[in-house]
Length: 115
Image 1 (cartoon, rainbow, N blue to C red):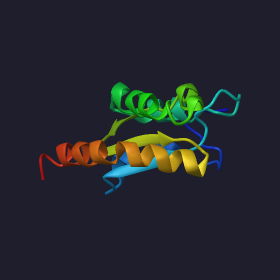
Image 2: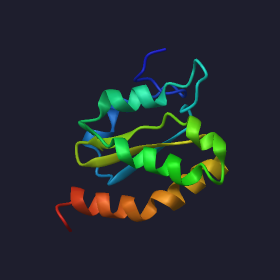
Image 3: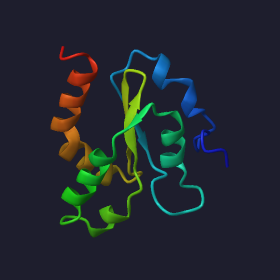
Image 4: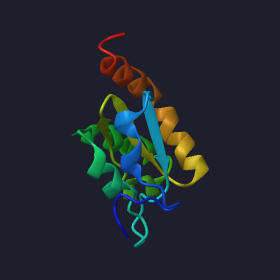
């Protein structure tokens, strides 16, 4: 599978750098199955990776859900848009967003030049 092509056939490189969005979440594809290529697709379009963001989320959530340690999620900046991978499980995705929300607000403010 092409690392830039999502599971639905969309091309992840088509949008972040040219969109007016502050934040884009992807869901699913962060595990170890052969089809789980979301982190690779994300990394291929990032201008700057943020290693710590998803590592911190994984560390914070491991006490509640030990499987969070297995996430290969990536995050970073493409153009002026923050891109972050979330797990495909809706409950897991909600937990990651809850943990990251204050950090994401700060990151988006920084991307806007403090505005």
